[in-house]
Image (cartoon, rainbow, N blue to C red):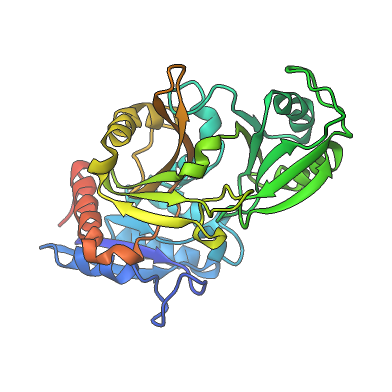
Length: 354
């Protein structure tokens, strides 16, 4: 078997260029092909061809790299992840393994990390409507909260929730009345809606029901106005840090480009304290999230907070790993870092190659 790597893509989607590929796919392919004794090719995953794809990759590749945004799969991710899982079981090195994608990328990773220094202890996960209705009226009594759905992207289904009722008596630790008026701001575009607690919880049930449905409930971090800090990683190596500052508007808290946030790209050394803290936390993160290898290309987003002595601290807000792009930074040679990591991982596994 040659040292061949398959790059999985999906047909269509807004992330594709005129050639039908993501703009960072062929740079990765070319970088791997430039390594002596290595080759790479793109395969479009389609449900109807999954058996044929499985057999081909099993027989002709030492590893796969997933570059599919699950939202671009017309029938969802179930059969795709099943195929990747079966390939991993045969010894093909998964980058990442589908269960690593699920464990790292799901919002409940924050709940699983609540006992670490990365996430505040008062972080909750709601897997059933009953859990949500029992706990959220109590957690909101302690102050502003952020609810995050497990699905969606670019801030969709992420809500900042504030009490907007001067007539309600708020007692910390006691459930708020269901007719309490709320101010709810969605991160996707910072638009504001006013609802009663009862109506808002009914609205949010859509995020809990269905496959992989759930909500994470976190304390609102007011210093998000100073910006969210994203570390882009290739394996366990930081590549750059993005400082994402929300738009200068009263209700703005979203750090997405779509919502008007401004991005600044820094060398990791400019955020050395945060980067060091995160790198030191990787063994804990992997142990809490299933003991899988870290994803090939992934990001960790942090928000600023203060400790009891008013020193800066950082709170993890999200991990992304399903299909992190770097199209605007190809001139930094990230594709070469990716190729080097692919080679390193495969060789570290002792995968037999001809």
